[in-house]
Amino acid sequence: MFGHRPDGRKLKTIGPFFRIIPHIMKTRSDSQVYYTQDLPIASLDEYISKVEKETGTRLSYMSIIYTALIRLIAERPALNRFVMNGRTYARDGIFISLAIKKEFSDEIEETTIKLKFTGEENIFEVKEKLEQAIAQNKDVQAQNSTDKTAKFLWLIPNFLMKIIMGGIKLADKHGLMCKALINASPFHTSAFLTNVGSLGIDSIYHHIYDFGTTGLFLAMGKKKKSYICEDENIVEEKAISISWVADERICDGFYFANSLKQFYKYMKKPELLEKNITPKSDIK
Image 1 (tube, helix red, strand yellow):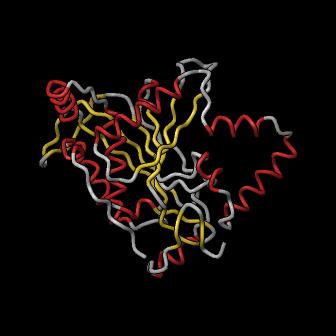
Image 2 (cartoon, helix red, strand yellow):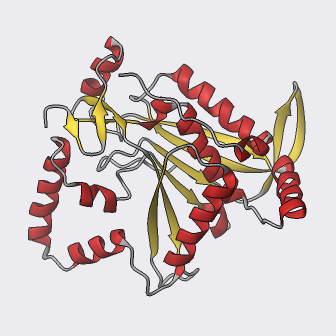
């Protein structure tokens, strides 16, 4: 309450424009911006082969992109902000939510996992943590905290559900939502990532939710041929698309543009992700 939340601290020194804009665009659905990057995968394939040959470790596109996203947020901390009730907050910790399908079947529902990172981690540490979490949640019988919360709410009658969810949203708005529920919610996260390429389709623009605090949503598409501009030359290369949806209230377009360039740099030189780093802190 009064600017304090269990998952973030209120920023007091943001500029006048970003002080006003949350009162003009009050919801994330009103503040979404969209961008698609075609990422050449030749450098990723070369890196994956090199690492496997030298260390026996098999990396995937997902582990590289997941790590690059964590590294980007660690180095560009304004991407880790969120807006709630007209106030802008810096999030405590880096959280990445991931949608996964337990089985490729229409009858089996997908689930989500949310992992916390400091931003210091290198690609091998992220890979191990990510793959362990995916393996644990791939079991059809497994239930994480998100699944258990959803199942509990599913048992509640509809009229009571409306009252409970209204109370949860009101508590969240005023910073009174309990930390256990925030930890279980995949919607209270730095970024959401989904690999729709594993479903055989190209990347999509997925909305960021008005419930929770998600500031970024990334969707990975399937491998394809694409025309890429390299050194003022247009060449056809194998690529995957990443579609971004972002809350434009957390930082300006220049900051977003430089962040996208940095992400592209990691895709061209994924070996940069092998080093541990010291994350940058956001403004006070």
